[in-house]
Image (cartoon, rainbow, N blue to C red):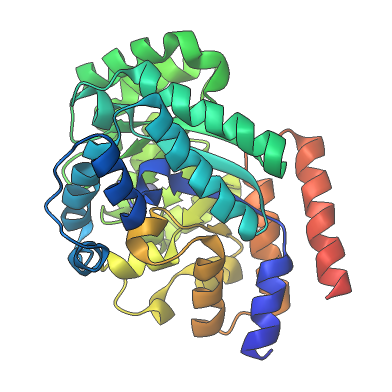
Length: 339
Ligand code: ADE
Ligand code: ZN
């Protein structure tokens, strides 16, 4: 398939995005606008300077800048604007459903109330549903570099909002903070009826993916790249029908892979793993979901059947009820048949 035809198919396919940190969608232009609106000093003079600072050699390099960027998010309206801007981008990419992460501890730690952050995010998600017809789930992530007590305190703060939170996740600095550290808080979240996801195998070893499965009992694995190093683990992921939310441009920018050609997406599909393509922190990594699809499709020479499979996986791996999954998947196949 030539590039133009492939890119047209990518643009036309309905998709869900399952791995997106809303704070990672803060574009440099909005960073400046909010800094000015809220009188926050930022250590950059121009948008170009900001983009030049987005050269990372590992996950921690990125996280340092990511947490710094959050400093401009102070008011409910800031969280609304951030989330609504992401939904506009998602709509342009034909994303029909989003399951987005937020990092409340990144806000409460600097004195912004939990309710301020979640209130603005949820208001925008509802506006996005009304205006663009994009359905949503919100996932609260615990910062794994903080301790178990802090995660429990965050879960307690979330209590009044639990009817609007679909699940909990685990993100931030992976190595040295294994999933087992959060086994009890994940059990508590499960007891409240929440879905469970965790970043595992991005930089951390396959053992962390095992822990996410066996100790956290996750419903989905975020990234999971390094699972491919362990054949028994691959078999377990396939047997469980686990979804992996892969983020190709993120992997490249954070040096999880050396070249986009090394993205594990094609291998995962060939092995029968339910892999999906996502943007992670698109403002920092150079592209939203379609840009991620285009990058891997070109580098790995994916054919239309593989692209359709990825779009289908994004819905089958979502937390939507089965009839809604089926309707979206039928729409994916209708586009495939027409193309
Ligand atoms: N927080 C935001 N993006 C992240 C990533 N890719 N890995 C871990 N924590 C994150
Ligand atoms: Zn992530």
